[in-house]
Length: 248
Image 1: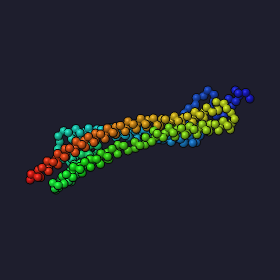
Image 2 (image 1 turned 45 degrees about the vertical axis):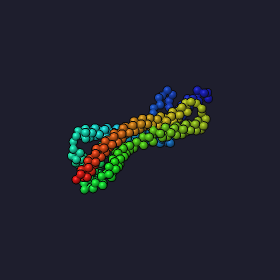
Image 3 (image 1 turned 180 degrees about the vertical axis):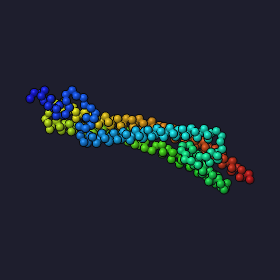
């Protein structure tokens, strides 16, 4: 048999007609079972990442909107007691959550407190603000590690599928004793498809992780800035109350 006949036989053995276009779906179905599992796992990870990305974008926008609305009311000169009464009656987030937690501790400590307890009140309020900030940041950062994990692991998982697919292709060459490129090309294409899916999952996850992590850091800085300002306001209130009690 001449080389042309060998090449034609190799093409027929792989199930692809000469001159036909190999689609992505056909490459998936003709891939080895291990490579199929790798592809399905990477596609599932990609869908999971996009769900997290969309959820975080919505959450960060909602948080920023709530922060802007609270700052507008807080710095408008409204009474802190009236604002606390309004906000404590409904679920809060962001700066409003910090404000409610600090005011709750303020009211609990001031009511019936002696002058000697005012020095510890400032420390308790700052502790409450720190805990509230940590709780709010934890909500914003939840599931971001999934993006980081997918971004770092997906290329290697895809590479594993590629290596396994190429090994299967070379075993097929050894079994058929046919070195024609038409025999090995479809198998290598299927194997490289796994790497492509790994990059498809990793690249958006990496970009989104860096962007969302930066947005969370900005929100944390806003919360910490408000906590410092509000702590200073309450500190002045504590000093004024202590001076009033000493004068009395």
